[in-house]
Image 1 (cartoon, one colour):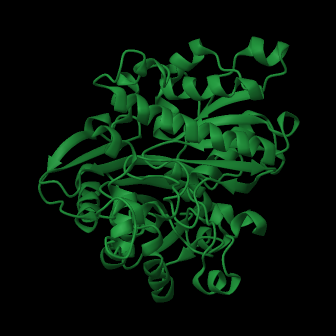
Image 2: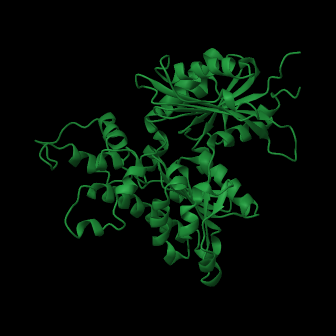
Image 3: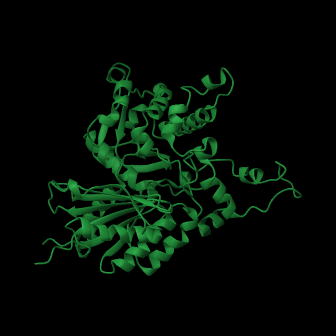
Length: 449
């Protein structure tokens, strides 16, 4: 008897990384719709030796785990995906013929309101949107192309980060530019990190024992790419990223929001723009500068925010008291990020209607989940809004169990009318698999043998 064709692969392609999770549907109404079987990841894909990890989740299979193994056969996302499938065959009891669906995280989906099966039309539509998310859409398309070739009998499905933000009101999504040009070119705020926000909303609402449709949050997805989102009664009201992921908060190599004319002054030979000295700046040049040559790497020389937080002075002024020290740029980078975060938190506090309409302030993402220093610096600045954090809980957060952890200072909450401060371990791969298993069209194709 052949094994059932019911596996769901969730694939998350970064600019030089690839994360893959394998799930199986539970087919039980009283349980989560999917069960995690294993995780795998690649890093440094374009380096001479990529690093590969694989971790089965079934009891008794820990001996099959592989951690940061150097692999020679991986040169790009396509070869990484092929290497994963070979490892799946060689190192586990799972077969590639069992794969029913491959779920691909696609950062920019334009106006797609929900997941779509990859067809010739949808593939080229995603391809056309690559210019709006240059760090991610191209990587996703590379893996999509590989999965269509290597797994022709499995469905490839695109899940879009932009879909969660389709509820943003028109007056927030639209820019103050010529409406006809904006409409014809699709120039508006789309928002990103939507799969993460969808997971966070559901997990946080469950933690608060509320229905997601009645839950309002200010969520900070903080990582090498970072954003903030205002969620009002289960729907995205506003988010810091815009037409592309470049707007809003600074990231590892992204500038974040800037004056639109900055790029012309940045590239001007004489430091100011005039007809004699201005260079001819192409869109691709500007994107390269603002997406890949900016952010905290440009300020400090590193994309490792843990190093930045460790070397940063506790306040932006303290490093200046005795003149600029060797780590003053680390302090600058740290507090630029804190300043931009609290700017959006304050704005969204007002947009959501203040304390009585907000259920929690939520930290998530790689930095939000693991940088106690960043959480503390943000929370201190948010006390005036009624958000109180326990420094003891904050320091112990990595050791606290649960998908959602309460970081709040209960004394502050109970006696000063404070609001919840939470940490959520987000999981975009799980969110894709879950949506796939619950989607009427895709779930019907999962074998129940």
